[in-house]
Image 1 (tube, helix red, strand yellow):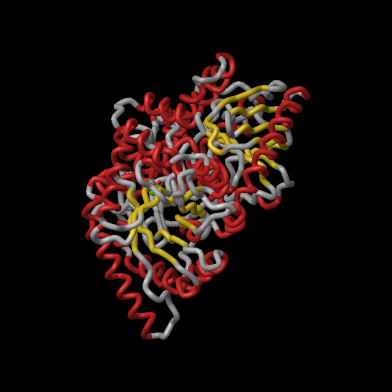
Image 2 (tube, protein in one colour):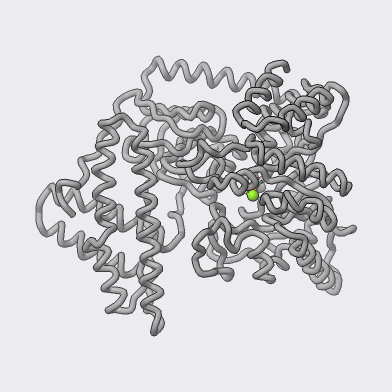
Length: 596
Ligand code: PEP
Ligand code: MG
């Protein structure tokens, strides 16, 4: 580590410093910051099986590469900062990057793994201990400051090795807290109680990843991908989060505070006015009834779904059942949680999606581990994983079928690409039904409809074939956009290119909708597009009559539907589908929306 490249001491943010990122969840939050430190990681220690050293070196190399990528991302973000701040952060990142290439830390870990046959986490922990002791013994204040950098890099390596994000005790925080973190996973977000947490800001993260979706579901104002965030906010300092514009103000002046408080009050008034729409139906001006349902990430949201007037749950993401735990939930545990939701919806339908493991939601499940995929978005995830680990699928199907004894449920399958997958799940359902019947366990009667998420371009293009084996479709525009445009929805470097209004995405939605109508099966949109009132006219114009979205978006979308003439929306949609430029499509839509 050369002292020339080591970090300068971190500076406090000057009063009123404004940073900008992706505004991923509307609303304004003002409150004291709680900075999530990188956190301590429980370090597993074990001796390697004979012959396992090579694999352990590879695992460590993967963690080093991941750490380097994270630092590169932070560096890319720092380019958007004013020059002096970018320089300051650059020193810190230079030092961290150096520590990941051929440094004493990296070489020491590799040596320990080889010589002592211990796991990489234990080797990192031991090597860190020795290095920090050596620094302390030098009795030099400058070097003492560098110890923190070594610890930071070590903690990053440990987090990436254990793949367990540090558990974050959000439940102890005072009400109104704003979480500031380098990165939050959906599992972290699920732990946020909106009664305590007012909003959050992260340095990394894209506009459409699951952390962003969770923020919208919880109705928490949030901004992600903020360059220069790390190290510039101290816990306790007042922070303003504007989830609409993506602006974050640290330690605001009194004037700025007053202006944002006024804006906040205005938004609250607007939300109250819209909430009055709860009891009126979603009918277009020319009398066409549209079904509005809610997406649910966790049982606690049921209340907001009801308050928003949801006519059912159009997408229950079951991943919450598998998060923040070291083992798999049993059939009974899953059943009890599903029962709470089904019973809570009082006879309104609940569409339960089988687990969508992989990519940015949950990386892997205990008992269903696989070697690391070189491209997790295209790997063994979602329905592919469920069909590979039949026990996992059967347990979940049994819990869903049992919950279906208490109210209408539908089974939704994620990442379907061809009819065989649907048929295999149907066989699994028959198997589980026979088992439950033998034991006289009450279950859904008649059996629930089985539908496919249309979220892969190949599935959309084969929607006519899929319609023959499915009872319904739900279009997942988040993944559909990602896979069609080859844009990682969680990568803030390409977030500006992520555009569901790209003609190719719209054509896939159009073809899927037409195929469903021809096959006489219902089709809904449950991706984030459904909850954005700017797109409501287009989706309805393309033939969609069911939308499912975060509960907080229901009133706004209903308002748009009630102001809309469907015949006119259909004409406009046809014009839009003739365009080959997303910017032109956006303009045409804006024009139409402006008439409302
Ligand atoms: C989608 O991909 O649009 C979708 C609704 O599923 P998820 O966001 O959970 O991947
Ligand atoms: Mg999806």
